[in-house]
Length: 327
Ligand SMILES: Nc1ncnc2c1ncn2[C@@H]1O[C@H](COP(=O)(O)OP(=O)(O)OP(=O)(O)O)[C@@H](O)[C@H]1O
Image (cartoon, rainbow, N blue to C red; front, top):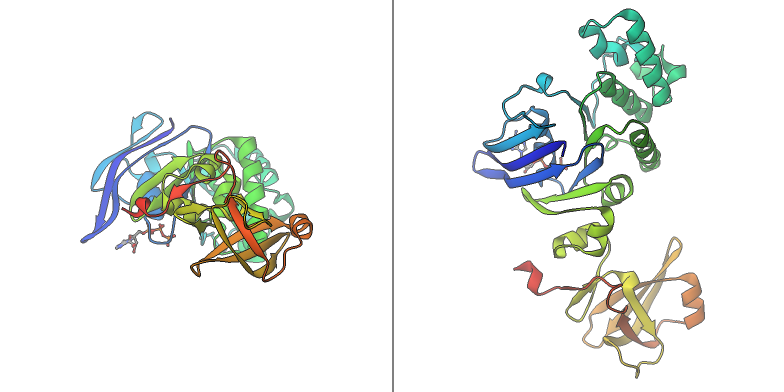
């Protein structure tokens, strides 16, 4: 394991920001810290970086106890949402900065910076000032600068958070490809579940200062440890006592067939390539089901159709008892 976070506690006054948090972060992987705003993700990242000190617990980086080491001795690179570039220095000089203060030979710096600019696809912008770059290009420059000093660990705090949705998506794909090339152990804070599911090898779900679950994207999506994780990772609907993904509910046109619930189609809406069907069940609860357009045509559903609802056969649906898990 590259980073071991062991029983970390952190308070701000009376407020408990992290409560006994333990996480093992594997070498060479891309790990997301995912959770709602205020849950403690950034605080944990800052403690790993050494920018914040924990009240209790330990941080090890590559087998070294880093708990009391200052940030510059931890060999970590960071990129934040609002990256502070040196405004008066060119892109090239910004990327070279860490190597220059380490007094590396000029030829070595030049070769390394060229390599990094190629890696982040900014070769043609090397002589521009940061203000002459787009937001996405600036974040790529920030990544190149962080990678220049060959950190053991790269820490990213919502690096694409300030960018618009389209650029975010492009940078997300790009980060995944970059990681596949350089394999530096990377920890990435996000509150966007789609971003975490798409990009990471492993996800740590953090809420109210605690770890709710750690797993691969598939494990979290298919076997959430509790209601919170299930709701946070994707859409849910309730059928009887069970929380289910809307695509794991089947619609049966024969309301007399064995079913987990019966009801009347109250609304059909198109969400991109999916169709959302709201079914009002007997006691005025609404179950949301998502189906494909072909399914809709095959079933011939319309508002007012009476239908049976079945949770997809056990093994494919994610069933959680919605009453038990809020305890
Ligand atoms: N320096 C500080 N002083 C007091 N409270 C703080 C400080 N830093 C963080 N907090 C509080 O600790 C909690 C966790 O903050 P943190 O930034 O770690 O959350 P987060 O999960 O990263 O959220 P976000 O996605 O909004 O950044 C928040 O309630 C925040 O207000």
